[in-house]
Amino acid sequence: MIARGSDRWFATLAVIGIAWILFAYDYVLDEPVGNILEAAGTSPSEWLVFVSLMMANAVGIPGQGRVAVLVGTVVCVGVLVVCCWHAARLFRSHEAPRPRVRWSSRSRPSP
Image (tube, rainbow, N blue to C red):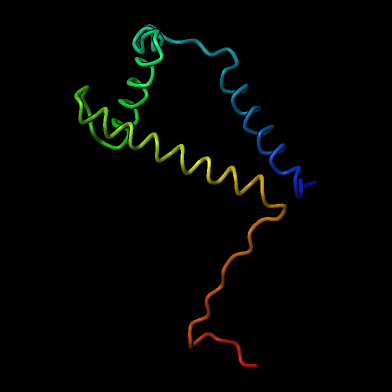
C-alpha cells in the first residue's frame, strides 16, 4: 500500500534510512583510499572548507584555492536552499502537486 497524505514524509524518511543502513552495514574504509576523517580535520571550519572543496570538485573545479572554496560554498548554499524549499513544500502540502498540462493549438481537444 502506498502511503498517502501526511504519512508520505515518514515513508520517504524510512526508505532513506533503510538505504543508509544497508549501505553502511559491514562497510570498511580501505587504506588505499585513505582516512577521510583525518583529511577533513577536526574543527567545524575545517569541515565546512572540506565540504566546499568536495562540492567544487563535483562541479569541475579542482584544487584548494580561494576560488574552489568560494564556488563550493555557493553550490552548498544552493543545494541547501533547494532542499529546504522542497522540504517546506512537502510538509505543507497534503497532496502531490498536479502536473501542469499545456495544450498546443494542434492537439487541443474539441469541445
